[in-house]
Image (cartoon, rainbow, N blue to C red; front, side, top):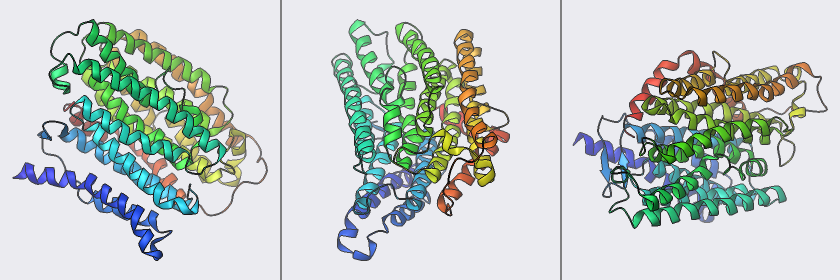
Length: 467
């Protein structure tokens, strides 16, 4: 009975998201006073959903013949997804990223995308993972272009075309594996060494999810999508969407003890770390810089895979730590943006004089992303790389550490512009409202999650044992 009550409570969260999504979409059509209040409705619904959150018992509950797995890992990641959603909603309410007539559609699509993420991280088989991937992705294509401006439509078009290519890889790989395996649960796929045809199927599926995780060379959509999409949507894509792809890639990675799949992951990690950090050096726009930063951190997560179970503990710690710094940095970009593509790095010049607390928060986000102690980003990278070293992949970690040192240049460039250069023109001076609260919370988060890293790491370690 205890387990049944927990499962009912856990499933109440995604079901409430579905109800809230349709409420935001349909109720304003019939109740005029609710028009323009969809953001508050959405935020209230998420806060209600969080009241159903319960600590998971140390059991795994399989639902729908194992298609959905409710366990401490899904509980951890669902809390992460709802936390990111709450922050994105706060940004969206403070500075609406959509035309006035599109508020209902915006919140509906955002809820549906989060629902897809929640199903994806709890998926027990490849069919469920693919359906969840599409539920996560299709709303994001529309959200990227919801402003119907040229940069937004370009972002949506490129994201859709390359995302469709990734989906095609995934479904082709699933079709191949479905012809060879009696069941497509991750447990069933682990039995036996794959033959050449099965290996081809696995590689196709891995390629599809590598698109969502933004590993090089499957990252081509990221810079334009992040730059052209509304900034709250870019924050959501950078902070949360990556988590779904990372979880499925880990499940696939852990099926193999060696062989060509491990070699391919090795090269994906190396190429991603090198090319993303080098490409970021020449960026002048803040959102494009954060986009290449997102790709580089995907490479760090791939490096952590090679640490085995200890490495995946680091991954589950890395995800919320990276999300806090990313949401914080995009929030600063939202506060300062003057046009659709967000501020240039030079637009932050003199921010330490005009808005010192905002510059200090942005510096904390940049230092955390760079991996400077005692901020949380340092410990995330340390745990990720330490696991790989202990497993014997020292060469891979050396490359990752060198490229992390390279990344320090472009992160510090933002800080130098804020603190060392005189103000460049007029900077927005209106009150920040909810944006300021989000920035303050994220700045405190990257500090506290670093100084007190052990509790979060312990929770992540407990969750990792269920994958």
